[in-house]
Length: 186
Image 1 (cartoon, helix red, strand yellow):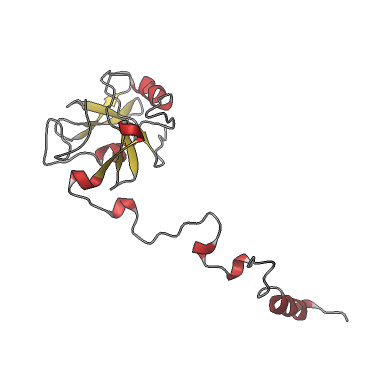
Image 2: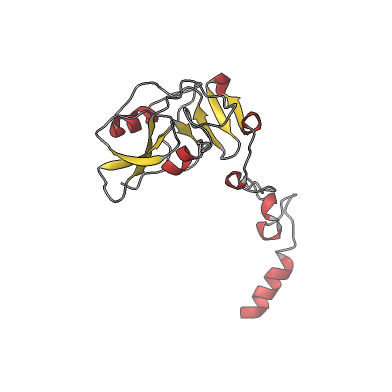
């Protein structure tokens, strides 16, 4: 018997789609959360959260060497380095860094770095009860180039929490982060 066009498609859809093979169900029948490697979120993204109490927001991880920010999902060095570096050196330093036995560190974007700031605080402008140590009340580099002047990059002042830009050949502090998807366009 010869089947053509629509009849063949109809026959295939009737016979093949509902059939299971040895306990495996075809992907078209599965819910997205059932697909291998797929995690269905049941809560809002971390960026939608605002956790006002530092003891609930921050969790010490990697053997006490890093801090998970539950509000953003980023992992920060618990103790940023106290040496200042030029921007290019800061990027190299972050990429080659190991904290708590883990690599994969980078310079944060200006948006990510700014999420640590508590604008109601100063010297340092961090939330009350934060777990960080050795944070300087000074400027920290971000990976974000200042678009109006690409020889500068955005930085965050942890004395008052303000954001500015600074020539990349000057020195600022470095606070490394892990996770997220930061990048620099220049």
